[in-house]
Length: 62
Image 1 (cartoon, rainbow, N blue to C red):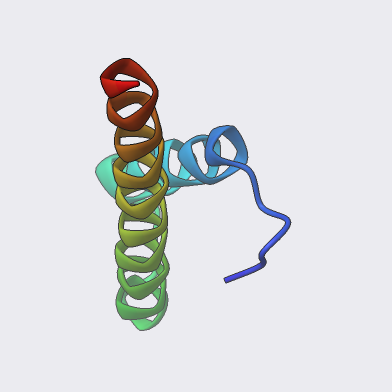
Image 2 (cartoon, one colour):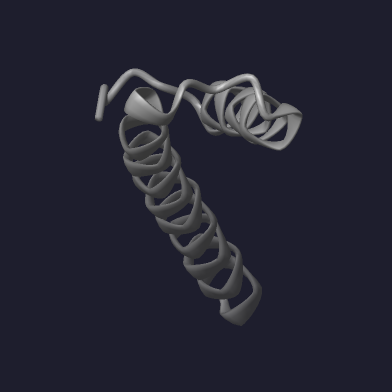
């Protein structure tokens, strides 16, 4: 995953992938690839949120 990717960019791409898959317009041959990309983006977003939460908790504890 690109280290310069922002949470907002990752979320927008994830939403676009979800729309594509929900529309039924994704070719079967590409479905696994798009699903793998979505899983990678989900992990990236979750990691970003976890780090942000930890930073907030640390600041609140000070």
